[in-house]
Image 1 (spheres, rainbow, N blue to C red):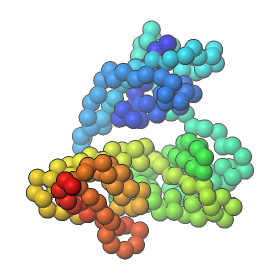
Image 2 (cartoon, rainbow, N blue to C red; image 1 turned 90 degrees about the vertical axis):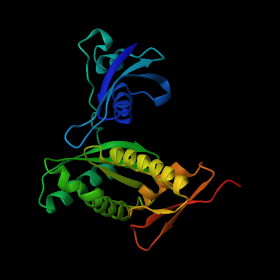
Image 3 (cartoon, rainbow, N blue to C red; image 1 turned 180 degrees about the horizontal axis):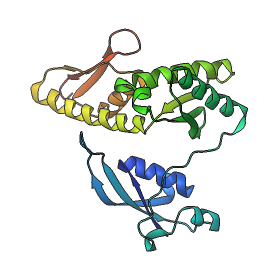
Amino acid sequence: MEYEFEGRTEEEAIEIAANELGLARDEFDVEILESQRGSFLKKGKTRIKVHVRKPMGTAQAAGAGQGVGSARPVMRAQALAADGDFEIKMLEFVRELVERMGYSCKATVLFREELKLGVRIESDSAAILIGKKGKNLDAIQLLANVYAGRLGHEDTRIIIDSENYRIRREEAIVKMAYETAERVRQSRNSVLLEPMNPFERRIVHTTLNDIVDLETKSEGDGLYKQVRVMFRGRK
């Protein structure tokens, strides 16, 4: 069966498809129908067609919409219901924290994996809660992880997101990493990137790790360090 989904990026559209269909990523094929890059004044948009490899149950098919025969059904990611006392307390903590900051919000489960829980904040003040380069979101996430530790889940990593900022930020960092790599290879001079948190620095290191004539290292102190991209030539 075939279904159509829409997101601001290809990754977001695929994530929405997986959530809506209740399938793993390797259980369906993706065809890009439309892709519009975003700009300062206009959000990007990607429309995909999903080809499901195995028959879906009646409940799954009903929840996924009417497929290609309908007027382009666009799917939106649905919040997951909190499962267990830990998740309920985490959502309550995040909501009360944001309210103490002076903003109303709705906190829902975005995803759950082994030793990882995603929490989505929905708010009319999302831009403020995200902050410049996600620093406010990082602060909320840090406090949420501290609270998780107090609940006896210090091994569980809490990921706080809003307006799919994490996905958009990751895409921007990957693009910046490749552009910087090209500059370094052409100039043979090292480039020091902007200060980034540990997760963002890991994206840069991972992205450039397989480029044999470059190397990266983190410099500085504290949480927000800088990554230096250096040319080392071919060995």
